[in-house]
Length: 457
Image (cartoon, rainbow, N blue to C red; front, top):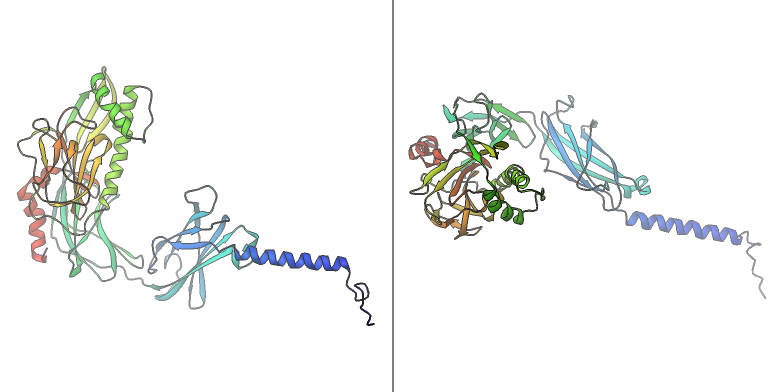
């Protein structure tokens, strides 16, 4: 009978087997942990199409399980590597699973960078023990062109005249590769649009001097290319200052009892302050600001081309009860409780008067809009929109094309209204502008149509 060696005889102890099994189990655990520990995902926001003199680079980084600890951004070119300082901020939660990373890169920050090609390398690390292996580190590499020549701008409109609170239009050409262009008025930006799809380099831009801006506010054409290069160009313009109305409105208990509860029942943006007066002030001030931001968001839904060819219609046979940029002081029992600005025309005729579309366009909103009550917003293209507030009911719905003069609903006193009328606003990229200009056939011809005609617009 053949003799089998014991564990002791073969030099392998039971303790050694146990240790071996533990080691194997640990290795299996490590492998499984790494297998289910995906690397942080990195996404540029927005897409990066090139590098130039200087540009901001933004990234969203997400890890489903672990906290993001740090991020590096490098630009590599011809065997050289340039590091960009990174600012890391929390995004949307307190767990650190999603972070926003920002860096600035270009020739100004990296003088040795040359025109040609380069690779942007973004590396994100999490706090798992797998960070020492491949599973705890995410890498994004982007091959991009490097260009230093900024876009070229050729101004086509010899002179611009614009009223404070009003609008004008400028035409200009941009060089190939330009991806963004428009007019900056102080901090306000008005994008440009192609005059014709067949000639996208010829741009038109309707801009405004805001009613509350100084007449000396700086105004420039700006253009950016896909490498982040930016050009600032001047043009000839003249601003005409305007004096706007001032009025005092006395608030009564009966008025607040009529308007405050319906508005409070329709919104979650403000909390009950415990009194009619405080609720009114919150509606008149805070909710008004919220509604202004909603109108800015509506402007993002605009068509890239003008949808109309004739002047805008003013509601017929109506009396003007309030004007554009009316600076209002609100009083209650002899005390001032608020100051606000009325940014449209209040037009009244008789109760439940028909309301017509001011011009051709697309309905982008028809519903409750807080201080405006039941309201309709129509997009007319290139950032231009009209608002009809305090209505009773609608004859249109979002997504519906309407024509100049078409019935869209009936007037009422819904929202923050003292009586039956229509609050009419004209908005450019969400900024209220003077409707009187858009009602004027001569202004439409001189400021819009005559400028477009030579370029086939």
